[in-house]
Length: 153
Image (tube, rainbow, N blue to C red; front, side, top):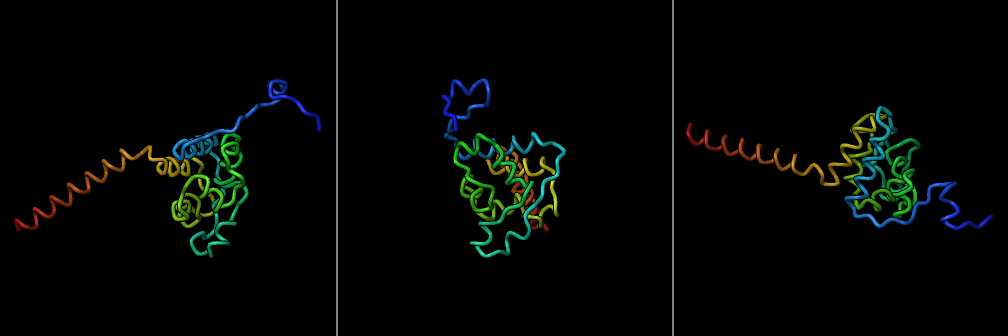
């Protein structure tokens, strides 16, 4: 193997320096990687919720949303070591139930549009919290109105 400095490699290859990313930045980066594959169908993981913890952690699927994350050089430089369910959950700081919502076939079928997964990942990053808060406020107002109407009857 020939040794070269990063300066020498600049003309030959992209040089990725180790990244320190917050949880939100990691999730955003994953969502962007998924969005770059607009129109692509990705494979889901089968029945993640029914597997014993050890088996669930080892789950992986070629051409899945987990693969998209692992193929991103910045996410790998930030510490993502493989595309298994357990490693992706650890790296992104997600519970197994949160990751289940993103990649399990029970939500999408055998394949899912990359844009649909990107939207779910982005929700986990908290970016769409305003939408959630707005919906929650409407639901609370409707509930309050229902309670008032029931007292009037």
